[in-house]
Amino acid sequence: MRPADPAAVERGAATGHPHAVRVEQDLLAARHAVRAAAVAAGFDLVGQTKIITAASELVRNAYVHGGGGVMTIEETTGDGGRTGLRLVVSDAGPGIRDIDAALADGFSTGAGLGHGLGGARRLVDDFHVESAAGVGTTVTIVRWNR
Ligand SMILES: Nc1ncnc2c1ncn2[C@@H]1O[C@H](COP(=O)(O)OP(=O)(O)O)[C@@H](O)[C@H]1O
Ligand SMILES: [Mg+2]
Image (spheres, rainbow, N blue to C red):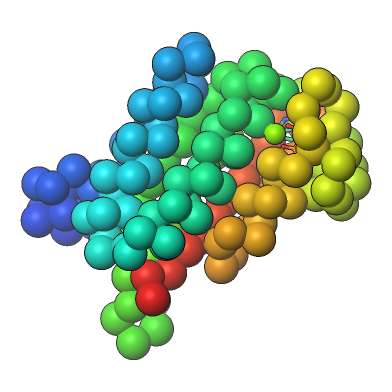
């Protein structure tokens, strides 16, 4: 992982420090942190909204299904120097038994609408779920600036 750019750290982005997701208010704090990072990374309003919405769903899942977790935000540089945001949302909950099923619209083991995980995937450029029963779930997403 590249070292954080001091200028980016200065403006509150790309620090990669963990945002705890333990209580309801942390969901809003996580949204605000993602918005700040998206603005700092130069995302336009549509891009900001997409990454914030995706992050919200993942953080809510960590909270609701995973018993709480952690989100990290990093600014990343890709091909041709384009900037992006990489978010990692992880928890040490029960894990997702069938990831393909969980990604399908309308699938929920809880009281949700079941559009969160699949919806989040459609809003970002890279989407990766790692999950194991009894170990937890880690979802990594990247959205590039355009
Ligand atoms: N972090 C997680 N830990 C355990 N199960 C999860 C997690 N995230 C998602 N899931 C499972 O995937 C299903 C689908 O997630 P989602 O599409 O967000 O729907 P919803 O949250 O509305 O149930 C959830 O109902 C749950 O069974
Ligand atoms: Mg959900």
